[in-house]
Amino acid sequence: MNVTNKVIAITGGASGLGYAMAERLGKQGAILALLDRNTLALDEAVSALSVQGINAHGFPLDVANEQSVIEAFSDIADRLEPVDGCVNNAGITDDALLLKVKDGVVAKRMSLEAWQRVIDVNLTGVFLCGREAASQMVASGKGGVIVNISSISRAGNMGQTNYAAAKAGVHALTVTWAKELAQYGIRTGSVAPGFIVTPMTAAMRPDMQEKIASEIPLKQLGEADNIAQSLAFIFENDYFTGRIVECDGGLRI
Ligand code: NAP
Image (cartoon, rainbow, N blue to C red):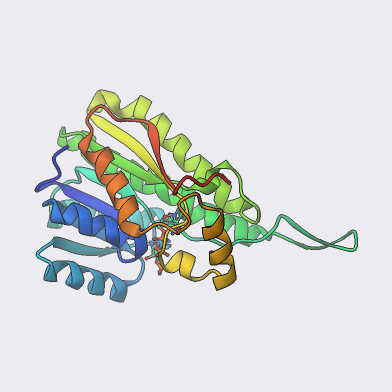
């Protein structure tokens, strides 16, 4: 797909990877619908992109809330056009070990709330936004591209029962939708970032960041634009669907 003048929705577009993706696709001429939960952050992101001559618009939503997602995508179609692309990027972490054991006794367990919070945003949110985007693409008859942001953690990662399960699920959606939606001209893809410098990783302890960097073959965390490049590849390559692009400096967890 040539993204020039195409309407591309990016969830979590006000921050981190979502913002970097908006910047890269925007410079290629895409019309961006940034979807995020914080209206102020959305306004700031839209302004910062507009200063660079990028055509960006903000749409507040909670990706985990069905009604909110339906209304936001309907607003995009009304204010812009039905979407040609959708990047399901909004995500959170709420890390904890399944069990914390002290002297052979279970002292703490991952709460159901922590499990559900992450599944709601990182997996159900992708389902809801992907379903809305695909519906618009079919109705418009134009087809499109849907990209889901997974993670290196989808392979299973200590302290991330909820997050790893969601990120594995996200890639399963990518494969399933590739099979179901190709007949309507819709391609899909996943991007699985390793550890990338964003507000999400900035929340980690500095000693933890250093330890992670030392284990990465390229010896540093990635930049947000590295992930935006992977995303742009999926949009550009018309024979790519249902597969995952791993961008992680060579790290395996
Ligand atoms: P980020 O900077 O925290 O950005 C995530 C954005 O999503 C934020 O603007 C956040 O809003 C928004 N968001 C969270 N919950 C939402 C909801 N319910 N509805 C709408 N928006 C919501 O994180 P990031 O590092 O850019 O991560 C982006 C994606 O990449 C995530 O899916 C993450 O799992 C994935 N990823 C990141 C890394 C990494 O190293 N950074 C690695 C692998 C995968 P608030 O700021 O208000 O919470």
